[in-house]
Length: 448
Ligand code: TRP
Image (tube, rainbow, N blue to C red; front, side, top):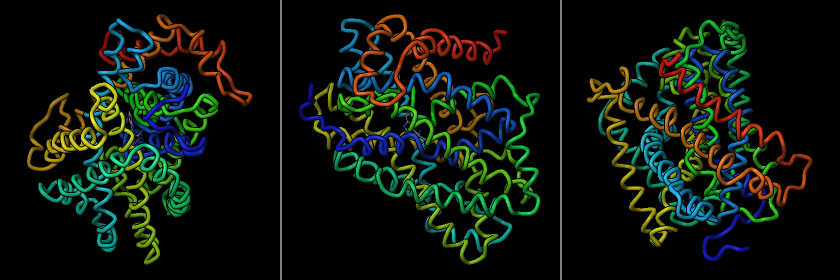
């Protein structure tokens, strides 16, 4: 069964690079450290790892196999596998989540773009990083211009099409990012006073873990692995039958988790060494990283510029996956031309991002969910509610409606390695994952 006119991945490596490129992004380097800092450190990390293993890896397999089986986008997949049923609404929810996430994602990515050009000046400013950072994101116009530039880059790549665009850009530069993070880690852990950061990050203190923190860990696992909104369904739809889904899932999840853990290792020792506040929020990475590089002298300036360049690339490979999901829906279902779909969606998402950016500055008085600013509220709704809910419904769909037998058969088609889907996958998808998500939801709204 070959797909006509939709394109396929050029190679197995191209697919892994693109899917890992989607997963690895601001979620790992910006959000994971600041969530870990906000919710108490190592205990949060442990819960996060547990969720990746027991909930997210089975869902990763499921999204990929649903995509390949149906050869469709997030909504179309459910229409093909469950014709005449309301299951497609899960896909619609996913598209909505994609809109929301990309709108503020692009704002944060804009900061990274700005830092490519500004980090030299930031680092030269010595101890004043926090103030300079806050000053730059609270102004009205400049962050919006960076946000526009970032969205424009996304539109350009996605409009070029899946193989010419996404695959080509994803294959390069990722290894370089890991390398520069290693440099960062070495400098960070050798700062004097780094030990307190290491123990915050590595020694769990479960008394610090709250129900809200557990929900945030769940949301973070979905967010970081690009799950729960049909992204991996869409990417899976470009997979060929001879490509190995279980092996891909482990590779993607392993790479993503590894990079998040490295980011934490780079950030926390430095946070404590410089006497910064681990719960400082969304600015944590942007404030800490320049401080570490500044501590390296002139060569640090070079590394700083390189770091923010690579962070921009990592954000770009994630953002294009979000834009692709949203656009693929209109290309497949409404028969729009690719360029038209991508431009219209890109512009709408840009506009949607404006309040998030202003919410950090002139609209900072606007507090929505429990005192959260606009960006934080949108992230809460998308990451902690829509994505886990999408994952939950996918588990129910596969475990209790479409059937795990069909899922296992599709998942194992083309699997060559030792890892195939079987009883363990069935048990996790039918019982463990949905029950766990359900309990976390109940707990976080205070039912028990
Ligand atoms: N996973 C990406 C990151 O960590 C963000 C992302 C890309 C995403 N595609 C997604 C999140 C789909 C949720 C759903 O930065």
